[in-house]
Length: 357
Image (cartoon, rainbow, N blue to C red; front, side):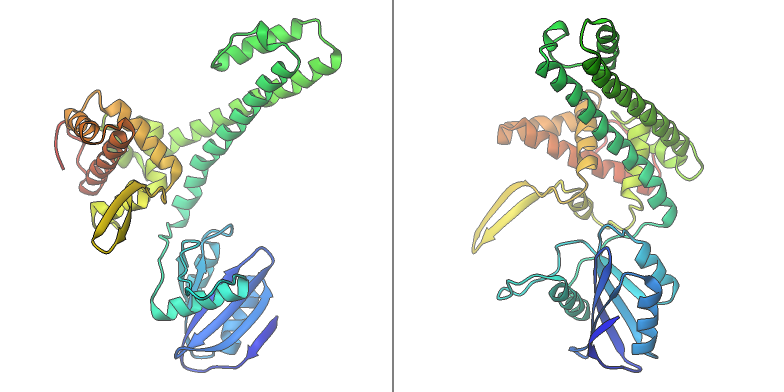
């Protein structure tokens, strides 16, 4: 461990800014608005814990770090050992207007300073079970990304070798890929090209099978004691099936932390951005600061829900009339639907068609 400022502080309140990277942690410690220690150390928890205990005996230690690739594991370790810990969203640390430099040491100083002044945002830290269950949902999306990539690779290879005109143009579904594979195995093409297609198609079929296994696991989670009641409540809403319901629950976590509708909409990134100067106020596109996948699920559900809920359809038509934009209208419906789903989960009452919350 390399200490840049080597002071030992006793019986004080210490504010630690920690800049997390794969191999190294940069530390800045402040107390009474003064930097009292700075250090660099290997990214190993026991070394960090010993540093705190040796440098700040008897002190109340508060730690802040930005959410990143390490997730919340460090948070859990610190809390388990009695240290106060805040996880802040990345890129939200206040930067002085005159400060144009950026590196890990400067960042950890900003973190410590903002923690001491109370000028920071916090990430909600879900419990370990929810985080681990959530990974199954995210694995489903990762596999979908890989499936799309493999499908595109097959289509491009067919085009490159002039074979695409032997197959259906436009969008392909799973049945089209299976028929294409059967046709290619019977084609009079070189062994090398046939081998190439065989590898690509079998990779695609393997990804489909893995995604099926993940889907089965999500269905098991949806029917488990931990989630079934909330899944059933969400499924009472139009346009929401069992897969969407369990995935929304896993991504949202506890909704009690959102005291107002606006806070929940902000979390989802479904509120318009705002630009104000003097007496002029302009609202722009949605902020998109929340979970992109959750937004896409809600918008997809909203299109389906329009067919069944007249209140949502009325909202959609009103926004279209005032803005002339169907895109803005469906975002407004998604925002309304999301807050109605929040009401359903918080109050443990099924969704009522045509009811205004």
